[in-house]
Image (tube, rainbow, N blue to C red; front, side):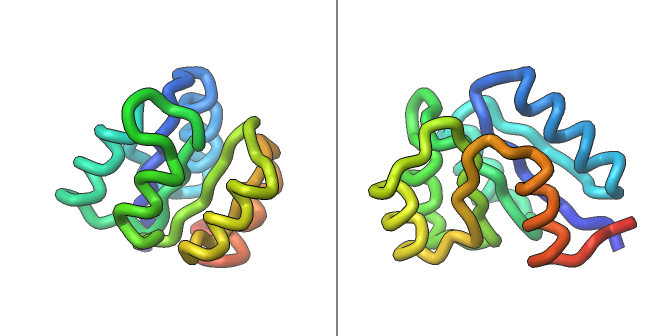
Length: 117
């Protein structure tokens, strides 16, 4: 079964690297360049998980998570992680808050959703 994931990050390089790793693992990957596009995609498509950068133009990752109640499984993946962000994401029900550690994020996705390959 192919899992579907949405990556929302305003940095094209991060989207590319993360999408490449996930596609190699068998995921179907869609990308959004900001929080507004992510929210639009989440309203019109079904995903098994979403990875949101926290600091994006328009809506931030935590604002998207707040709007969707962390459905589907939501992972905040950002260089700008602090206690307040971790607390809010946990209270909202996000699956994880990770500070730009790609291997850790991939491990968490595998752990929570199961490896696809």
